[in-house]
Every structure is written in C-alpha cells, then in structure tokens.
Image: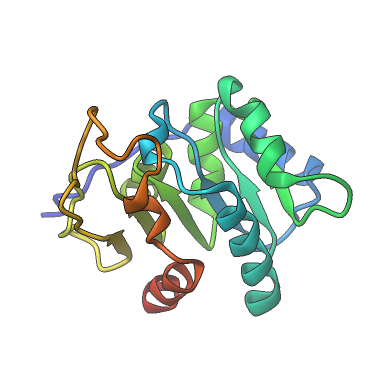
Length: 186
C-alpha cells in the first residue's frame, strides 16, 4: 500500500486555483515557490529566491508563482520586486486549499520547511525541500522529493538559533544546488 499522505482538494478549490493562475498570467506549466514560515531561521535568503526564479525561467522557460498566506504578502512583494518581475504572486490571495490545488498543477514545488512544501510530497509533485534549522526528513516514500540540508555543528537548532540571526544553515544552500536537485527529480 502507499504510505504517503493524500489530500482531497475539492472542485471549488480547483476552480479558484484556475482563476488565480489565469489572473497571474499563467496559462501553462509553472513552478511553485513556498518561501515562508513563521520562523525566520527556516527562511532562505530573498535574493536566492529571485535568482532561482530567473534560472528557472531561463533554463526551463517557465514562470514561478509564490505561495503564502495573508501574513506573507509583504515578504512576497520583497521577493517579487518591482516592474518586470519574473515571479507571480498568490500569497494572501489563495487559501490553503487553493494553494494545494495550485501545487497539484505545478511542474515542481521548491520550498522551505513549511506545510505548503510538504503538500508537494502529499500531492506527488516533484518537491525540493530546503532544511536548515529543523530536522529534515532525509528519506521519503517518493523518489520525487529531494531534501537539501547541510549538517552544521549548530543544526538543527530548532527554536533556539545560536547563530545570532545569520542562519548559515540556510545560506549554505545555493541556487545551483536547488536546480541540480530539481533536475534529479523533474
């Protein structure tokens, strides 16, 4: 039997996801990005998300869309940038169920240790999960999930970072490593 979790999305969430993607200008394949958590020690630097979106566009010819809740809107705008941005936004727009429906359609999801990233695995989508301050799951029931984690003397620190806000564990994850992991599973 299949030990992986399953999610039921519902017709309403599917329809709303279609509308959100259409309004974002996405009418074909895309990548989903899940950069937010409630704990800053689990965040990957904003400039890495920006560079990743450019690499995904240039290498695969596909747009990226940021996922997140209402509290992530300002952070999404920081990552997206201004005019000519290559990242689309659903943070603060899509509900959790609608975000799951968006993930279910993504070519892959790349995210930090957060529920939206874990949904990628549950929905059997290619998933690259970035871990640093928390204990990663290094083995999953699916070959389509790849975890990036650099074991440092201070990690996992969980809720007690000792790095004085530097979060070296997350900064050690490079864009090239994320793309390489994506190529392994996509």
